[in-house]
Length: 355
Ligand code: GLA
Image 1 (tube, rainbow, N blue to C red):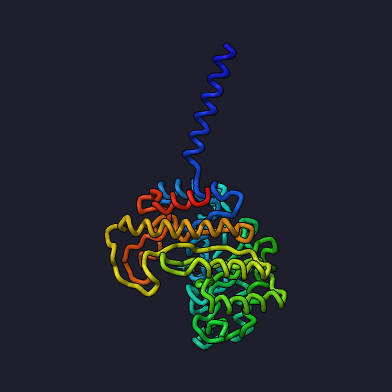
Image 2 (tube, rainbow, N blue to C red):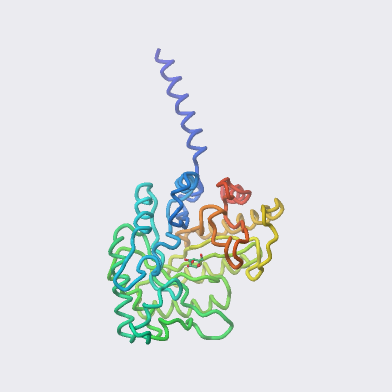
């Protein structure tokens, strides 16, 4: 009797270990390294397959659009929290952390923010007041439910010149201390949330030089900034691994947490608008992509003492913004899961590289 009981117990244990091996997700391979994140649009819950995939592979989410100024605060006296609330609730029910994205950005911000009722530009004082009100209202609503916020997004100017800051309405109206104000308003609104600066091309040497000037300046002024997000909208040709590595090290050396916040690997070079794979991507290209993803994740793993999170910009190829950018309706294949939610060669390559 006792032996039979023992047999049944061991059979159950074996079966359950098979089950958990089967359900192992991407996040589990990095559980001692960094959070594994995904950006989600508001309609993702309509697709049961995506919901399952998100729960299996990720432990943190970023609302793709729902917390941007335009959708969440479309008019001076009107906030619309519906989509953001739903994402935060989904995260809480499923044990995922949440990143808030984003508070101060020149894009996807309504025009009224920068204008008086008669269309003339607002004063510096008025814009600072509007920023503070917006940041305080949004952050207070989700206080205690958000691990960290992208406080300022994409403030750096592109180009070979020496000019650090983008010529945005914030810069024009307030001056270069608008970033410091953003961080201070955010700190006051939710002192326990981490606060980040987030931008693209952060592995480009020229942009890195500008970013280091900006971030060091903020830190010197005592701005409450905890981390820096390298968006990671990369492709299978660019940027070189060495530049990614130099950036991770350089930002870390400032004393900041480093995050890869919007990762995708396009099959096209940045400026390429051709449509070579309208139906499906050839195996040879998926293989090249797999090798790149594997090398990138091996690098992330090597620097896991500096990196706190790696977030993909979308759950599957079907939901990627790159299907509409830079060319509308051009299919792209930038993520680890295909249009049906099945793991691509890149998924297996990443696991193999870090196991
Ligand atoms: C930037 C923003 C994101 C998103 C992408 C494109 O990287 O930070 O919120 O808009 O562009 O989808």
